[in-house]
Image (cartoon, rainbow, N blue to C red; front, side, top):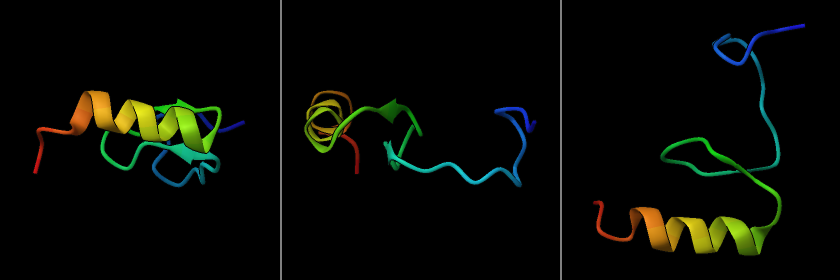
Length: 41
């Protein structure tokens, strides 16, 4: 099994494109992105 730090590992799902946090749904991802990254460029 690959570790989470393995750069060759393919991760799927609702991952934040900036911090790669794994969310459970589109709505959670959207909410997370707005709250955590809305001020970032």
